[in-house]
Image 1: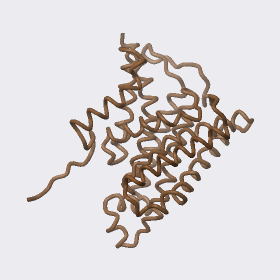
Image 2: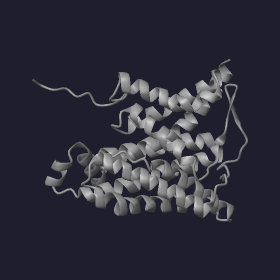
Image 3: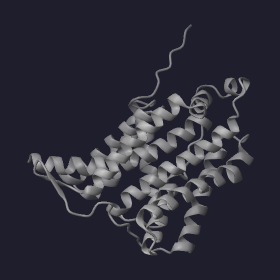
Image 4: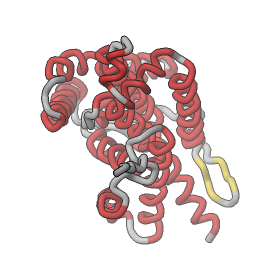
Length: 291
């Protein structure tokens, strides 16, 4: 019984880490611009697809991963410059619709260029399961969990120690005040899109050996990343990570103990519960007003 529970837990933590990376992308862009970027799922898909295609073409796996992540980051920068910046004075709802349109364009181009087939990426350390407390754990799952923790640490250092990171934090707290003290908020928004694209690509590369990838894989990953971000409160890294892990574990437990047919319904049930009872999320800032 314990071994079964741990098996579901390991599975949930693995996929939850991917959701957490997607949620971090949503959170970074939302905090710097107030926009929910629904193209985040396409960054995840694009990273996994490019890495799988390059690896299948004979490119060494480390180089394939680096190129895939770098190209996806460049796509994020181009998207911000070509689509978001010209319309940045539009209403937030209009910007959200623009990101949905951008995601459809990216998905369509990938479908035409790479086809509709399913692609896979070789596991980084082989496929031999590791037995731990009676449950098996794939080495790739350790890569997902370990890299996610490293990214969280790197982001904490970036936002706490670098000028650009502090500028991003200042912009997220008060964009007008940041502009008054000389922060180039346009540059901050551009970098936030690039960073979100990098995080999405890394998530896509990490889970591709486990879940496979295709041109439409970003739809559900993006939606679940959004749910994880809302669950965590859209306020910062801790909430995004917690939201992703909670969502992944809830999915795995539902699939294991009830039925896998209900697994994809879990995110939407959770987001309804959050919106009804905790509209600011589990870790959202509490707003108080003095009268």
